[in-house]
Image 1 (cartoon, rainbow, N blue to C red):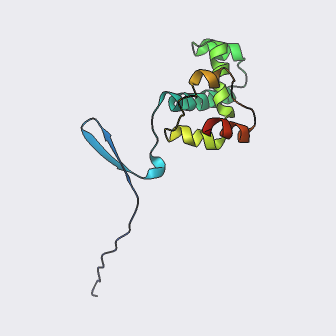
Image 2 (image 1 turned 90 degrees about the horizontal axis):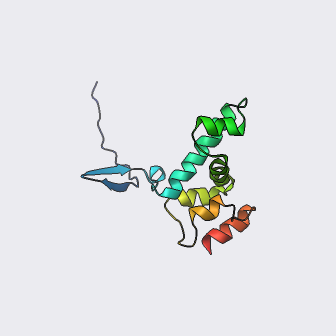
Image 3 (image 1 turned 120 degrees about the horizontal axis):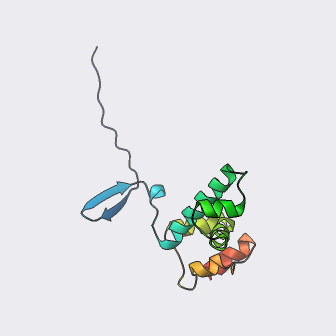
Length: 122
């Protein structure tokens, strides 16, 4: 039986990322920018998940176990209330100069997602 080999070319989009002396190629959807705000967003997600996994712990006990203050945890968890569109923008590295981590943690963000998006992209 004779085998037929045929070359198939599949075009794909990739992102080139440099880290020190290394260059990485990755799919664009896997390409997120690490900023202080994106790190905090990831931390908020992680903390929320851990809180839900330990329903027997009180808020104060959880804070004590994690060596953080209740005020800090409350502020961080505010990030989980951001609209999905804003979360994606943050993970892609977009953060307007007038938006600070302190604004978000202090709760100076509109409650409705539509209002959040207008505030973030004005």
